Image (tube, rainbow, N blue to C red; front, side, top):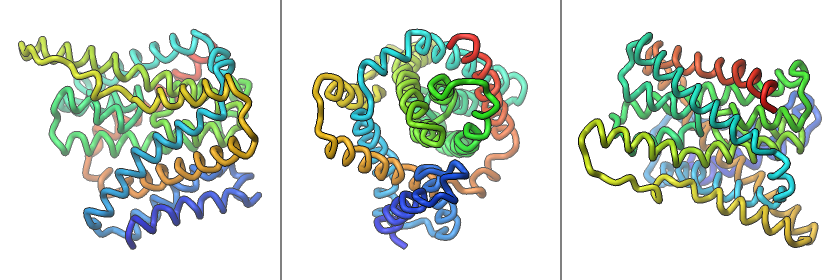
Length: 327
């Protein structure tokens, strides 16, 4: 089946199924359901697909995700963003430094992985999943197989993390707002942060998205530092192109939040934007799910999986203690 029909159908099915109490009671909102259905579809329709299929999948993963996040900004205000606090920025910086440092030590020194593979998996786990891996690859010029392995492992454990948060929440002794910050500071992908936060509550969702987007914004300084280091190592005078790595959709999100802070928008506009945002994010999750193949994970071998699993545990356990300490 063409992805042009398959992905919108998966997203619509996920949104409709999420309205049933039986799914809601399991913490399965539209976005987790979309990735589950996407994974099932990805294994049922195993053909490589046409160029149009690949274009549709990329569009949903990138453009629909970004537009959905921008529209989600209408659910927030600057008062809510300020309420998250400066400690959230400090928390994100500590998480990124700890995960990247631990990942490089474990991957290179202990597991003897290629340096590029260790860097890619560390960046993807620490910052924003596949987007961070692709941005990092632009700096280190890794082989395509290394990029594929890194994306596969990060997507796998990022997806597991997304479903772990609703299980952890009742035992965390944290408020919904604080738990949202925990989600945003430790989950891999933006869409997974949205899905995990939505599974808890509206307050958790708001804080998860704001915290996660602060973490995404730290991608640019990370790439700048990495590019500078790589240039010094190779004695190259090549300049870093920050425009290419800057996650510009974040400024759209901030603009929408600012609009909602200054003006009292009609309820039907806010409600319509909320529904459209949910559907677009479900499309992104469906596309992400179809790209998650067990065969690809198996091909990667055990060492990258051990590394990604270790960073997954570090984010969940270490991140929880950091959040309790700082937030």
